[in-house]
Image (tube, rainbow, N blue to C red):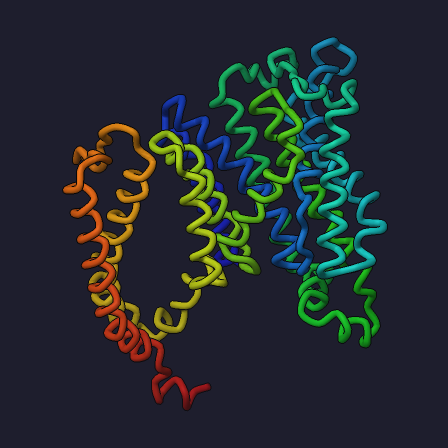
Length: 409
């Protein structure tokens, strides 16, 4: 029992001490963004990773939850309602659940491509409605609320972003725990069965449609919680929170992190949020790099970063993981040089004046800058290709089941 609780205890402690490690305005803002992205990505994984439902409109439940949460803040501001803002994410969750109950009542009758197209149509319909129904969505300007009008909670008035973080941390922990517990329930297990073989699930007496519907509603509820956290953090929502870009972003988080692995969307949310927040401060081409990373993930890591980590499970249990350290290092060094040289060439093609890359001045009009970049990229690519056979042999050796383990199994 203690062994099962240890990861959750560590997870809770990490959420509590993170503000002490990143004690700055930028650090707290980044942590709040990560909290929102983690819940949103995990809710999407309930659809695609656990239930096999590819959705292009998951932002609908996220956005509707956020808009209802902002309206609740406005009600509190005008003293039409009176409760602490710590319950705002729950209101967002209920909003997402109600939307999922209605949309799921007809969309979950189908799966695969048909379900994906229905989700895309619903997403476009809601996004268009957000510009038409100005009384609720605020049109292009959006709507805003003020969390500072809420009553204090044990003397805390939630004026600072650091105080909002602890609300987000509590809700992230609760949402993560309940989404994990859902995967252990019969409904969660059946969602996996329907994902893998809906015909067989139907044959043994379970309704694939109802299983999809339950997962769909649960996913909408937690997406709404993420939207409520967004409203609480930013106090402002626009039609962008409902559009296809937001739906595409959460798909990238789940896929890059690793579909089917519970920790995968968490990894993807962290990676994409860091790229969005930090990398965008250094280059205007950060979206290009996100797209390239997604394509490379699909081609070479179809199970995502989490799947890549889990590939080392056999070597870990056999105690042969240390055999991969040196081959990985030998391959990673030229590969890293190739990536940096390629990024430098891309930035050169976009720059209009001298840019500083890793402390080095690069002139886009200088043939020397281009020549050095091309030579480094070519040499590093060749060196990486030469190291791959050695890495492949080391991998096969480290993951070969020993005779003792083969006999015991």
